[in-house]
Structure formats: structure tokens, C-alpha cells
Length: 220
Ligand code: AP5
Ligand code: MG
Ligand code: ZN
Image 1 (spheres, rainbow, N blue to C red):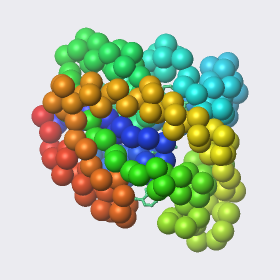
Image 2 (cartoon, rainbow, N blue to C red):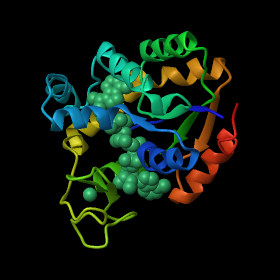
Image 3 (tube, helix red, strand yellow):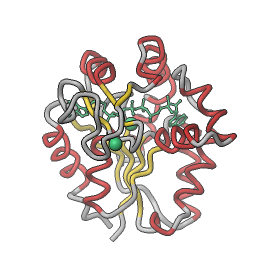
Image 4 (cartoon, rainbow, N blue to C red):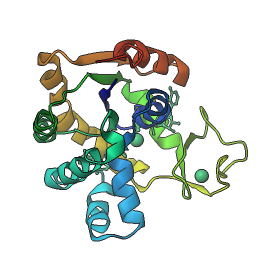
């Protein structure tokens, strides 16, 4: 059994929150380009430092950089049975590159899940998000607070705001999403792999909607 799924949606839609849980449930890796790029920046690799200049202001990292990164990641043994892709692809060029990559390996996408969330809720989620400096765990000051304010439940690390969750970068990210990523909805709709789910409601409500869109992970 294998499962290749894309979680598509605007900044703050809940892609990472859902992907972390569901990838574990389905036994495939959670491949999040944003997390991979932030980790590279934290380790101060040349790629990470270059990417950080784009990420901090909210614009996209160049296609060839992320396409290379995802190509390498999907070639690792744990991705042989699939992956949950979170935050990739987000341009038509990236979607075409992914199609080529999967075709070369004789595989294909099972489903693209689009998270539909209103702008007001996105802003509420982004401004209240806190992430752990140590392990990267994600919280929300209102809807998913840690047991002790400012401290990670898992590793006791300090919680901080993402640099790109500031007002100016959020505005840029929403614009970039609207112009560069929304064309993917038609791209996948015409290929009959798109499922649109309601991304509002509790984390468990949203997970249930995704499971039913993906067929509980019991795909090909
Ligand atoms: P990336 O890290 O992918 O950011 P994003 O797409 O903007 O999405 P977010 O991570 O902000 O949101 P999310 O949907 O994961 O929401 P989350 O689960 O955290 O990318 C960052 C940057 O990296 C980009 O701007 C770009 O520069 C670069 N990059 C990455 N990929 C790239 C690519 N392919 N090409 C080019 N550049 C790329 O949830 C948000 C908050 O809401 C949390 O606080 C959470 O607790 C809360 N929450 C979640 N679900 C619920 C719920 N159901 N109810 C209430 N609160 C909820
Ligand atoms: Mg995320
Ligand atoms: Zn932590």
C-alpha cells in the first residue's frame, strides 16, 4: 500500500498541524518544504541562508531550489511508499516538476487536499501561532496553548513567533499565495485529483474531513 498526498492551502490553513498527525497515522513521511528550509537556515547551510532571505519577507524561494530539495527527499528510502507533501508544490512549475518526478518512478499522486479557510481565520491563526525553538512543535495562544505559557510541552524549549508571522510578511504571503499558488487548484481539478475540504472547525473535525477525502489512507 502506498499513499502520495498533497496538502494545499493558504498560509496558516493548518497544513502542518494535520500533516504531522496524519502522516504518522498513514505510515508515510511528512515532507514540508517550509520546515526543511527553516531547518537549513537554522543550521546556517549556504542553501538555508539563501532561502532565509526570501522566507523572512514572505516571498517564495526559487523553484529550482525547492524542486531539488524535494527530489532528494523523495528519493530517500522512507518515502518509497509515499509521503504527505505540505507546502509543495506552490507554483505551476513545481507541480509540473513533481509530475515528471513521479512519472519517472512509475508512480502518481493519489489525492490533493485543499484546505478552505476564510481570511479572518487565517489571520487569527497566523498571529496567534507560536513555535518551539527546540523541536519546532506548533502551538496557538488561544486554540492550542501549551500547558505552561511560552514553554514547549514536548521538550521544554522556548516558544517564539515565526519571523514571517509578522504583519508585513503575512500580507505578502497571502498575496503570493493568491497569485502564484491558487492556479494549482485548476491544475489539479482538471486532473481529477482535487478534494476541497472545510479547513475550519476543530483539529479533529478537519482531520476527519481529510481522512474521508483520502479514503482513510487505503489508497492504491
Ligand atoms: P511554509 O512553512 O510552508 O508556510 P505556509 O505555507 O505559509 O504555511 P504555514 O506553515 O504558515 O501554515 P500551515 O498551513 O502549516 O498552518 P499550521 O498547521 O502551522 O513556508 C514558509 C516559507 O518557506 C514560504 O513563505 C516560502 O518563502 C518558503 N517555501 C516553503 N515551501 C516553498 C515552496 N514549495 N516553494 C517556494 N518557497 C517555499 O497552523 C497555523 C496555526 O493555526 C497554528 O497556530 C495552529 O496551532 C493553528 N491551527 C491549526 N489547525 C487549527 C484548527 N483546526 N483550529 C484552530 N487553530 C488551528
Ligand atoms: Mg506549515
Ligand atoms: Zn519543543
